[in-house]
Length: 469
Image: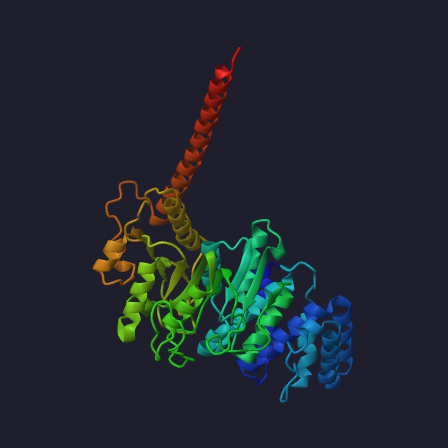
């Protein structure tokens, strides 16, 4: 059975077993069982499934015993699993759910089916929980876009509000997809919600991703679990427009003290301060952060732009987040000298999965990430970047100053070209121009090497001619 069909079948079957439990409680219940199945292996889980089938009324005790066995064998997982079978669970349904999970193989590959099922169920529970799911789940296509833009091949990867750990899992998938080693990255995260923190630890364990999520769940502003970390890559989706946060006005805020009523720029400043030299960050924020002038936010944004910490902003399409109607954007941060900033207007991108939710397809992700990578290469080579009207533009600091440091891409990219004689779609044009630019870089490098060889030959000839005969 194809993976997508298998996932859907499993979800329907598991959902039928839910009974009277709400989605939030059932999420912990099912995901904990999938995790336990992954850690136990085939033999132990088969035996457990048979025992529960034979004595359904003893299901809770049998699961508790298996959990204790796992904790004894894996001290690093102690405290990760909550009591799986909570009060009020219909034990007559337990055997059916365990039998269902028993049908899944528990292979050793971190990209195995159980890991995929865990991720799929996270997404499904996010849909079921609605707005409350924002604390633990970022849409997969947004995570993929961030990872494809930052390309974390190796180094320290950090997320100060890691939710269920999806950023880390996708970063590891990126490394493996590019033939890297799983230990090429080390992950560091923090999460304030205890239930979500447990989900994240289970998610890392089930995918065999080594990392530190701190000794306990904690608020990053109030109790930083990684105070001395200098990260090579930071991927984060902080809570949008958080109005209640542990604000400390006496803290050394590099770009200005963030307002008490909105933590958007507090997150940006915290993340910028965590970057190692040469490090880069990708942050999902409410779209208002690009233009707000309230409570000093405009001054903070201006200070960050003038300091050269902002490299790119992306206006995302609506309805990517089922958990909130607030339009979202991406901020790409990179320490360095003041520079031009790439602005990308992707509001028209994406495909509707249903009436309420949109996702970014492979072509959308390739167009956005490709434009960003091409812009970085052009900037590093001192070459001009081919702007695409209506989609992306490399904007100079003087132009940004003229707009009072407002970074809304729509102000800069203009309208798409009309009357295109060859009818080339914008996405195709971006891809073509990116390939042409990369080809120019490669040809430039080839010519440089050829010239160097000629210089070396001439130098050797000159030196030999100067020797006495």
